Image (cartoon, rainbow, N blue to C red; front, top):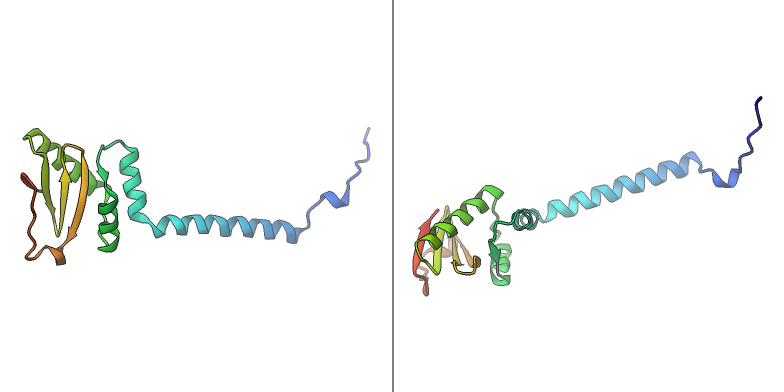
Length: 136
């Protein structure tokens, strides 16, 4: 036997309302993707931290990386971590790491990048208070 179904028209959404809701969701997703794309270095850095590399960046180093537009891929972060480990195995405490056209001063003991210098600033620069250098 078929029973009639009673629908409450006030509880139904119009096609326009459904389309508008779908459009809002799409815009929100695009905004989230754009926000992620706007900070690629931060997301790569956070990924490295999440993976437990043990490498930290001081507030000063983060600022220098941003102002000098220096970014690292996950592979480069791994190479930096490897260089820090190598320096630690040799007894280094504070090291200059040179990779391509970037120099990093790293506290090997704390596994912390202290500052970063780009290629333009490397010329005629003097690095003090280091006990080792690693070419990556």
